Image 1 (spheres, helix red, strand yellow):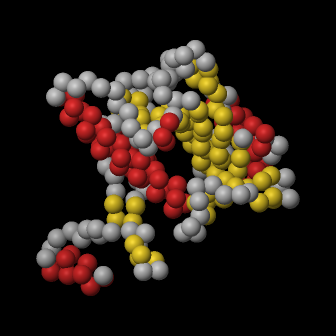
Image 2 (cartoon, rainbow, N blue to C red; image 1 turned 90 degrees about the vertical axis):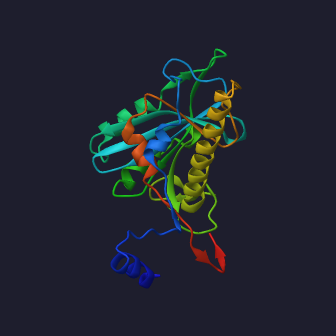
Amino acid sequence: PVELKVFVNNCLAETWEDRSIKSLDSDDLRNLVEDFDPSIALPSGPGLVTAGVDTHPSHIDIVARAWGRRGESWVLDHWVIFGDSNEASTWARVDEKLQTTYQHPKGEKLRIAATCVDTGGHNTDAVYEFCRGRLGDFIIPVKGSGHIAAPVIDKPTLKKENGVYLFPVGKLSTHGRLFSDLGRSLAAMKEHRQRVTEGLNQVYTASQIIHFHGKLDASFFKELAAPKSRWVKRDGQMQ
């Protein structure tokens, strides 16, 4: 309540902490870094690579992520393409990055099999243009849905004037899953390191954890820690 916040700040001279909000520390996330280099070879677990593309007026962010069994994943690359995101030349460089392949230890090369491109912001038409005619390559435009029951990804709607299918993506479900997986990763790494100190040198693996490598920039972890998870009461239930 607002009154309690005022009392804590003004009467007790203490910093108010909203306990309904959970956040992550970027330094804690950096402690998840492992010794692998995807530019040389992937770990043995991944079998599929996907990418997510986020647009900004001055640049475009791309994250490539590999997936294994039971929702286990590996962040492979974070590329920042500087340039006007309404210009075709900028998107040409995005396309170049999406052609990246990764060497699997069993000998196969894995390409980026599917890409979601966010249509939010002031670059919607440019995203539609980039994705038009590429559904067969699984390069699809997506738009966040704030509906509480929206799934991770839902059935698309045809944007006739743009010639693309637009896929709705559930904001709560995707953000919640990411936040949960990061928390699970922190707990799993803590347990793994404890077992290593006990002489149990076993492979670090678990369902729905995210692996990171040392070549990812510190700014990546700061951005990853920026979103916050907040519990709110809706229809009599905490969500």
